[in-house]
Length: 245
Image (cartoon, one colour):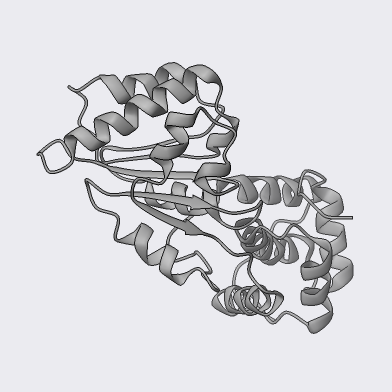
């Protein structure tokens, strides 16, 4: 494969290039690989003020990808369990703040103060529905609403509107998604490289997509074609990339 730009030549530059790419990949709805989750994707895409969607599924099912992708634009807010409870409380109580959409990720990990704030946010959402102040709610967790380890009145609110379970992508879906991403970048992934990625690396598609992008850039930086040894060198240069045993 021939590239039409001159690559950098030093290993430190290659490593920095890799580390710059992986954390900075912005999720998008178009970049979400739906597999069996097409209905959930379309519900998130169409989510309008006054409506709510609760997504649940295991690690790597795409919950965070969908929330981050949808919570972009004016009046949109994304929070996870690490966000201060005061920030969620402000969104729930400051009626002078115009809201378009609020996305709250990983609600199972919310502390008591944050649970109280989310409860208040659900109440504001319901009261505002059908008014000029209506906004959308997009919430995620790792299990069905009534199984969540949360206060009882909050568990019931999670199921007030639409609820979707996100299924893990099949290996065939993941392989095709990686082939498509590589083709978009003008790359040809060998079956050996693709199999190694699918069996050894994180199942999260956002991370895998970023890995393909990084592999392209890394091959330029190291003046080497994309092979399994190159992939292993890339991962050795960036030990922070999650990998399964």
